[in-house]
Picture 1 (cartoon, rainbow, N blue to C red):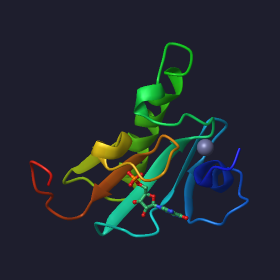
Picture 2 (cartoon, protein in one colour):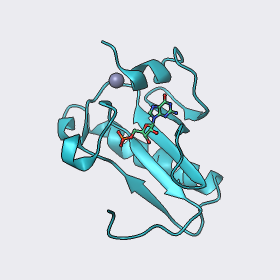
Picture 3 (cartoon, rainbow, N blue to C red):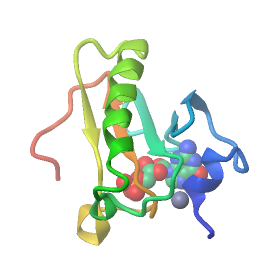
Picture 4 (cartoon, helix red, strand yellow):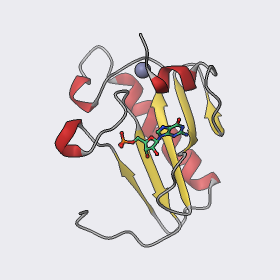
Length: 112
Ligand code: 5GP
Ligand code: ZN
């Protein structure tokens, strides 16, 4: 299957990786929307948040453990935002589940 983030997780497409373990890969976003903006993805292909189910949801909890660790390492002690876009109306542009982590600036709420 041709998937950009599967290829990044396998190292077939280069990225600025900040963390990797057996099930998770994290890397800097190519078009950062904040001074710190990285993405955390499962290595397993899950197409979107709508495809999380009882069989694959374990990695999602692990991703949030990794996010807490990486946010601390990246100096986000003032807070940060975790964003997962889903589908067309949610603004998802890459069809592999990913969690944006944005920090080091004040972020507006509600989002546009
Ligand atoms: P989405 O719009 O699906 O929520 O987020 C996709 C994100 O992936 C965007 O923030 C975009 O900048 C990022 N992105 C797209 N292609 C690449 C790439 O080849 N490398 C990296 N590091 N980020 C990418
Ligand atoms: Zn994929």
